[in-house]
Image: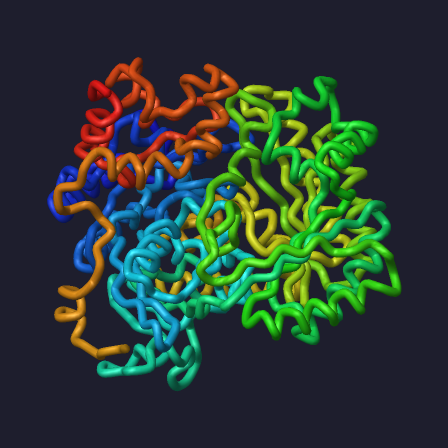
Length: 519
Length: 104
């Protein structure tokens, strides 16, 4: 067996489990070869990808097969690592935190169970990808839109569970979840919210049912395996108005964010706005060597050349408005009026109306074009990001820019930053791009990442999501009352998963059997 | 319109995106590969840089050995990640290879 097993995994128990898995789901659904192990490891790892290499993968096709896999894992004490489609690229892909875990790959549980045009909701299995759901909506001519992440190769359910973001008014994906079916680690099936009633007609309408609401408990957790999810979809808008704008100087982001924050809070602007630096644009359409072949971070004069070539500013963003054209014209006037006292610069307006050809990069059409960032250095590229959450406050965001920029320069990594503005917070995405075959660069990338965690922690900002390498480190930054939240998570974990088989280490939550050794 | 049905009945009416019924290699290529390898997409851009425009679009190539396609799919190449057997089964890969290597 090529994969390096963690010492907590018993090789004989693993061997028995794999045989039992084959009997339960078929030999064609259990993958154990060295090639399989490598294909389920972290494809964009900033270190040796065998650090998080699984021993095997198993792909159940149904709820019954999923339950059988979990029963066997309990019997043999073999840890599973759940992935919906395993495309969480930049955050570890399909790879487990604990090396030697068996990947529980839900790719083949991929039924679209229901799409309800009138209630604007769907019920889907975790293997349904964004392309699958998009194609289904198109082929069935259902007038609903999904919200999509910038890289849409993955699972709709998986992305919502990991609190991904998109660029329509439904862009906070975890907030669109309405009802789940979950297999608990011991194999029991529960339905959350209104779905807890046998003949419920409101499972995808009303989140909470009666009593405590549990949907969010299964986000970024290892408390259960989501086998079905209800999600709200957006009625297709009559039109989309895109207002493109940029801030020429770094410090313009201070007034810019404050103006956008007010517009967001008043819901004149009701979708995420991502403000990004020039390398964010350049890395989509070019490679680094076309700009600069020196060591260290790309210098300011080269960044200036990018701004000139693409006719962009230092910070660049698009506001998108969705709905009836009459409404959008009013919103646009209010937005322009809010910007007018600060700058004479005009917005570049682009209209799209229903029935017109859909432009490339439309926000409701899946694309993986964003993955071009991995070609920035050429060769075997990789990326990850450190993404702390901040208040919508221009001064704090500018200070964060200065702090992170200094760290990128210090460690010689190209500065790629963005701030995605939600209604009450900003997500500061600090993209770290590297050449996986350049050990010096990946070492510097890892040191940069640690410095960013520590700096942001000191400043009071915690990450919302992270790569498998940093799950413990990020969990440790949530340290109120001597990590009381982590201890609560551990208590829940031990109660629901007494054998500690489900995704050990996910979000820093370790079951009892692994806990002491991990510390 | 929403009907409430028992799960067993509901399952008969659902849409299975898995490829249980026979699917052509061309359709599989479109679903599984063309998201990166259609004209203008990132895989095509990468191939264009490496091999030139004339060899950048995979399904227009006439020089792809079957074993090479299988190897790249399962092992990845440069920034292209390997594709797991959970994502594309061996049978599906056979059909994709047949489509890409058929005389055209």
